[in-house]
Length: 311
Image (cartoon, rainbow, N blue to C red):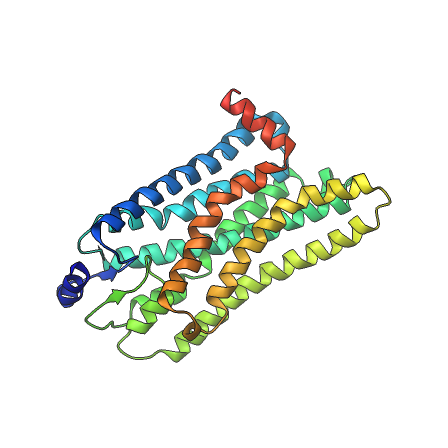
């Protein structure tokens, strides 16, 4: 009944309606509680890594500085969607303003772009540390590390503004109902009064470019890294090298696997429910489990976290 009221009143609404996860009121409250806990755990996990790196002098190295910046990025990334999702669970209308929709659209994709670049420079850092251990301190200097971090943020936030501005200037149909929990290009372009094949192609092109450029850098770094690791005569040295890069490789697999399924396969193959689940996984799930992945097998990080928490 509530969903039918939303549909009936949609023509009088000036913004968009984010349907989210339609279910009875009791289910919405349960989802609100669940995602509130997930959000708090994500903030605590990534915040703990930032604090541990900040207060433990032994972690003031490029690898951990990049990790702390990545954790801050994850906090921003999950914050671009979850607070609005939580508000929608308790809302009867589930309305997001036109400007609010495109602000969320911009920040969600800009932060996602920044994450792609961060994963690439973290792989590059691991390559230098393992393949050039003696020259690593002179190669990965504090200045280079800072420049790489700034470049990731700048590139990430300059990647999508043009297409997002163009999409915001389109005319949309009266219903303005988005069967998603966030403002995503697929549902938005489907609501346009006229098809925009050029815009759809351009979006696919720049999204593919964004995904494949960092991904190829990551794969290139790991190919060179693995060649160097397998040339080591010491089994202990190989284990240490794999332990150093294993966490990052796991995060890359989780993030890139879900994002490529979502944005590089034909949109017609995805039902709305599957779109939501895959998006939920890489936008909410990975920021939640990344702190666990990075701290689980890292003795220095575990020691710093115990020291930070006073245990």
